[in-house]
Image 1 (spheres, rainbow, N blue to C red):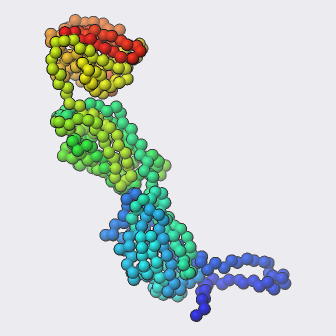
Image 2 (image 1 turned 180 degrees about the horizontal axis):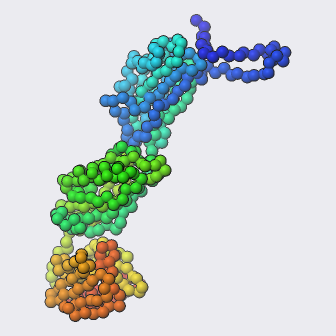
Image 3 (image 1 turned 30 degrees about the vertical axis):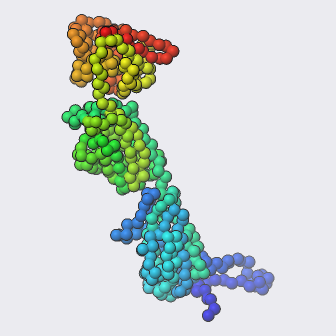
Length: 450
């Protein structure tokens, strides 16, 4: 039987004789038998890079093929081909499966592989508008950006074309954190201030690169447990979403797990980057130590990691009546006591020609027990007790008290990153240490007396 094209619209065919006679203006009407269907995807999905269609429900997107000017011929076949990095779930396209459309039209699966589905035009395609929805079941294995399906007519009268049906956004997450505080292992949750980590800011690198309604997982080391959190800021989401987020986190944080999970809220604007600024409160095992590295993952495509705290066990140093040196270095959060390195959460710095150190660490380096360094939050006052000495300092005041006797200092006591700092010579001399400054190495050496 000769191949016949069934046209749904009349065509004007111009002969050369008609044109030569001048009866009609020359007119070119290209006849393209491969451009006779309208192919569209009803929904373009944003999916993670490990996405796999849920086989328990309907496909989330469909390729719709609608007959246009030229009718389809039953028995003709065409092919759907996926772009690299994505595969068909062939279990959903067994040979003989029929996808029924409007007015009796249908397509039947001839065969399916991971990259190609061969379909046969079946059913009734005579008269009226005809279209068939082909559900798209797929999995992503190694792809980024737009995922496309190619319609290859293969001799049928379908239109050729490539159509985006999903996109894998680039994983772009900006993570910032403050200087990691020092935590003591084995602390309980009675005093949350002792368990507070640095503030962690997680920001979308570009608007809508995170997938809404997908999960975010924040994981702490196995030797830690989350006992609380504080959501400081949440930008780019609605007030209602923020409240839902707070409620979710409050429910999930029980002190029994080292992970937190929540659902990414929808962005308030396609032009706005979402961001979250949070602090966490964690306890750790008694025998643990090291950096507390937070790992962020999940299907919302929030990825990254950051150090939010450092767990350092108390240093046990045997009493020794011999002199020893304590060395601090400007800008360095590590100091050396009798050759042993110790960590601080605030580094020494120079301001207006004066060298400032955190009082707590100077006192501990000079032999003061932690329990004898007292902080009065209401008064902003530090009291240091050593042997028969009692030293008092108040943030914002330039009065130093030693056993009640006042000394007027030339600068007031400062508070930096929740630590009380003071020019070194006042406290160290009061506690009985000689101070040496090395300009070249930017080091301060305290020579502790016997």
